[in-house]
Length: 399
Ligand SMILES: Cc1cc2nc3c(=O)[nH]c(=O)nc-3n(C[C@H](O)[C@H](O)[C@H](O)COP(=O)(O)O)c2cc1C
Image (tube, rainbow, N blue to C red):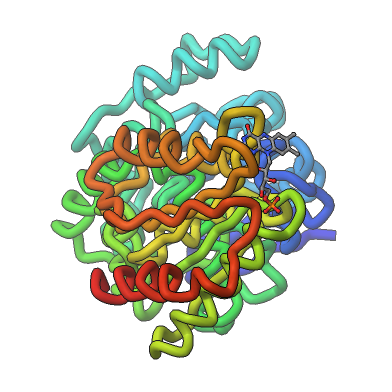
């Protein structure tokens, strides 16, 4: 059974949802699933914008055939060669022998790496600023290298003012019959997944996202069709501003997240006592996470959201407790910067985790590590309340 929806009179969503997959990129938990979006532009030249993941091939092929309604396919535009969008290139070329592939030089090279297809007479190579006439629709190609792979490009359709944005403006989460952002409560149900998607997938490429946002600012965009998640047709600025902040590594909120590691519960107790102190001093919406049971992608998203971070960690075999060490490695890899951090460590004979955490934070860009560290010897004692109080106060003073 076909499962398509009209985006506009001439543009049809022909993508598919996947609620079975547990880990996106075999790495990030996606309890709400994910959508692989693809769009068919119906015109004198019928044009398919990308394909979908191998897991969704059956639905996708049926959708494309239904949307074409017996007409031929003229172009397949490949904006991104990551297999969750390109897995069906060869299949589409076999099913529609008259179709030509549109992509940039890097795209063509990658198609040759992933597939055994002869593109000699079937390729249209485009570069920055090139256009493709489809009839009443015209696509303008804008290169977006490293948003999220080097060959990524986005396409602006000027008659309907639509940006086909590749992975940009995407989010985790399957589409549940509601295709458009204003059909769902995005702020309530989607924003956390959108943040987690952006920060973990393209967080490292803030500069490249900024370059794309600058190019996009010169276009009159009425709609954004991303490769994952809802189509944006209203309140675009809300989502664009979020991406602007994330890609500049600016916090969304003046807020504190406390992330602790704890083997036996003593560091956890200290983290809780600190949270209570901050709460009693008027700090709102404090977030506390156990690094052992919170997926690192969630902690990364939270670190992008908040302005202030507390890392609390036991010493483990002379080093940093592994879940926190893993978090720091992810922070570094994703270019986390511009945050204020307070560090608390714990040790029973030689607490060295704190020093090592500070060293790692100092290797990141623009991280302010607060002067007062708190080093716990096994457990925080009642007579250390003043020290904890001062530790909490320095965070508030820095806010
Ligand atoms: C495997 C293991 C290795 C540890 N290595 C160190 C260490 O190198 N230095 C130290 O001072 N404490 C070390 N500890 C002790 C803990 O850091 C310490 O007991 C701390 O209070 C535990 O905090 P928690 O109750 O939050 O887990 C180690 C504990 C374990 C289980």
